[in-house]
Image (cartoon, rainbow, N blue to C red):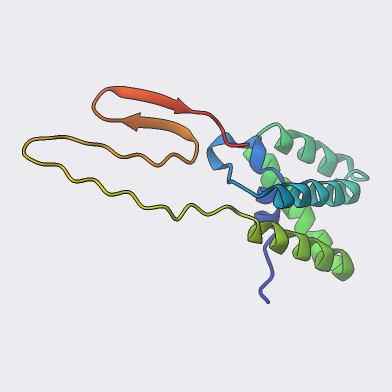
Length: 138
């Protein structure tokens, strides 16, 4: 089974900090995300620079997510048992993503205009002048 990268794991952990990249997860996956966050925090909190990066990443700092991923990469390489635990949790979280496979069909006749929008979060620019802000997924 292919390993999930430290960067992908860090992105899962800090997913909620970035409203535009929030993915929908099942309740079980959200519990696993909290467990994964705790495991990573317990490993990083002894290193003041890593702990600072973790806190800043949690506030939405993308460069700090990258720093956490770099610290995590070293730990995953040096501690195979921890790596196995983290990889297992990450796979379980990935399996808990909610996938929207719905379809939309629209038939316009004559000079009719029509728009269909599937919103996953972020800003929606719909039609010619309507702007709606979708609430962040939680």
